[in-house]
Length: 250
Ligand code: MG
Ligand code: MG
Image (tube, rainbow, N blue to C red; front, side, top):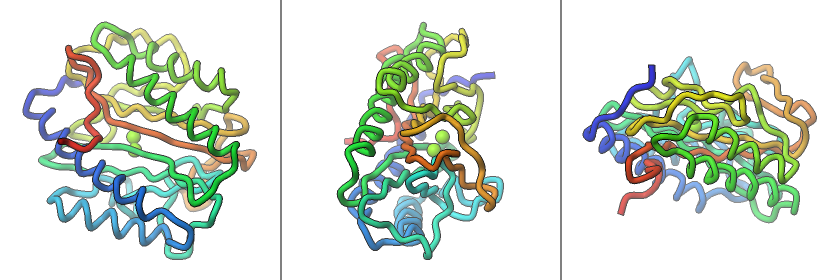
């Protein structure tokens, strides 16, 4: 069952999304060689709390932090640690969730740490492009497969691997609601109705598609050890077009 959001719910989702965007604005500034992923988590936690929101990830299925930090071959769900220090040339995906007034904003962004290789630049550019290609299709009257196909077509054109075991999802009162959104075409003809919300989140790899869960039970990494990128926005399909909630409000 895909829930439509009321005007009031959309308002609170935009507020939650604004707080998530404030965290990303700060992450962009502080991601640099020498900082630990635990320090990033602390900074994110402070911003979320200062804005009277709840860190959605903390305690979610037992997750121990308020952001996910996934470096290089790590795809998603990396756990912040004081022992993990960013190095020049790394790529880090930071995933942030905030709950405000009972509604969730969920957004991930990949950041270059200092100077990165041309391959990593290409990976980041393609994954971000595919996110916006998907968002463009988040319009009433389209079907979910239109979003999936738009994402997949960028991966095919750029010869990138697509992470297949994870994908986008409905979002609202819960971080994960119906529907599941594939990042490649599976022919899902579920209609996109006005005022449904989906977190669209392509994950592309420089190598093959395959991933596995590390021994910590959380971190997902590529099987071939090649770098991965992750970009995500929470988006509402409105009659005026796609509304990204996880951006700064004016
Ligand atoms: Mg996320
Ligand atoms: Mg998500």
